[in-house]
Length: 145
Image 1 (tube, rainbow, N blue to C red):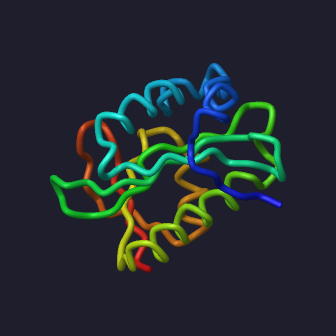
Image 2 (cartoon, helix red, strand yellow):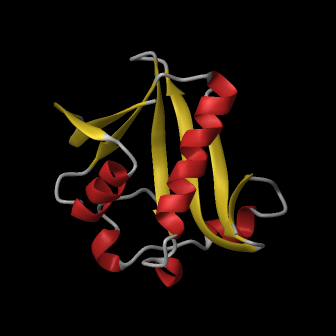
């Protein structure tokens, strides 16, 4: 069963080992980069390990983006060893559920690097739609909750 767990001193090393395929590296931040940002934005960032039972398989981070005053799927990756097994979609739904339950959100935004068709299709499959905005090299998408 897929679940998400907060990042702790007990699981941080395993999460830092998460890697994507070489051709995906330009699409996502490393877990280390993401955790550095989570530390800097610790009041508004919510990083989680993605688990299959007790096995770490990925990383997801939700956040409140103060500049635009909305909640966002900020970082997301599934380790290359666990891709194409349905973990990504389930983890994404759990991240969305976290924001809905904790903050009663009406909308969730995310950005996708142009060319990352797999991510766009995944986000569309759970209800995200393109907003038409391209900002900071990212194509914005929004989920109406």
